Image 1 (cartoon, helix red, strand yellow):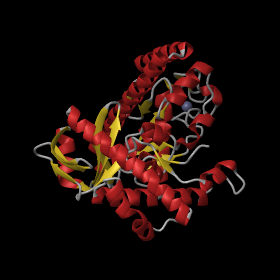
Image 2: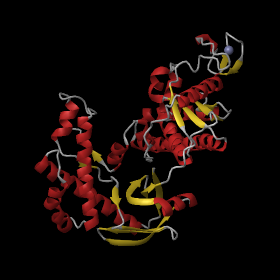
Image 3: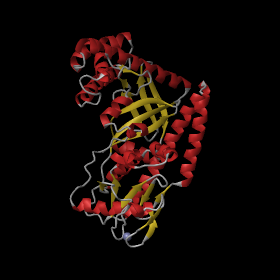
Image 4: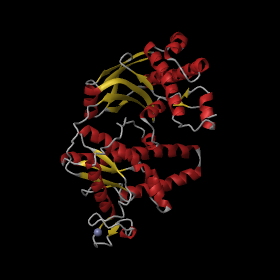
Length: 418
Ligand SMILES: [Zn+2]
């Protein structure tokens, strides 16, 4: 299974300058190559023919090193392949759609700070010494230190395969290295399933009694929401900068929490020999009806990311995962099966009108999800979710992109807007 390990580079001003020059140079060149490609081939770009057209000029006029030149030609070809795929799949609308015609009528452009892929020809790793060497337009930068956790270092040295992307984010340089990590042997005789209920008051509640976050997190989010509104009203340049910073802090915080929750759930499932039963999330926003202030909290929580994290950690641990239809899981009594809307007295309280049992509403729902999981597993409906490629962008995950789309987006390909 593919996993992306992100490490941060420790750069001196001189190295930072060289990297900036390299990245900008490569992306300007990619935009130029894209224009040449579009002029000659339209959307059906042929890699070999394109290379003949641009390679020499990339080397001489733009001082791009040979490996980087090859990489960026490939990056352009991949971007057109992805665009053709999107058009064919109808992601940009039908034949007559404005968006689709616009996308097909202009060459793809690349952001100046978009990620650039490197491979063994122009990047060398010394994982024990925690440094890399990168070939740039200004020569080879040797011994650039990076920082990572011991666990990341282990993954890097045993599973690193193929390319790494160089990118600049929030004022720092990062390498995203692709690793091919072996999956755990699937436990195909699970001793039951842990049901996971996702909600507003409690982000995740399991049938085994684990409850994630809840009040203090929501309080924090409400405060953030309040500050955000205040800053938005102000509308000055400084306020906008602060907003952007806060948005990223928020995303990092949510991502971190999602990592913790998913790890706790998967570890427990592994330890107790159980599988995990998740709600099929595709309908969650349409299904839940809430008062307005809560709607903000729910929409801004990345449940999709949490689901992705659970699935990939489960695959590594060999824990089976099933998705179940969440219909009626919050109205049905987990003890007697009596289903009634009025069973759920309020957000947190469940009182069965059939047998009179009193339970925490989320806990009751998670037990139903667990039971549905067992039924689904016994019926042979093992999760058919494709292996997620874990990217750093929580927002991307929420937008439901495919792995290749996400990658091409990260590499900076964007369809011109006007
Ligand atoms: Zn009951």
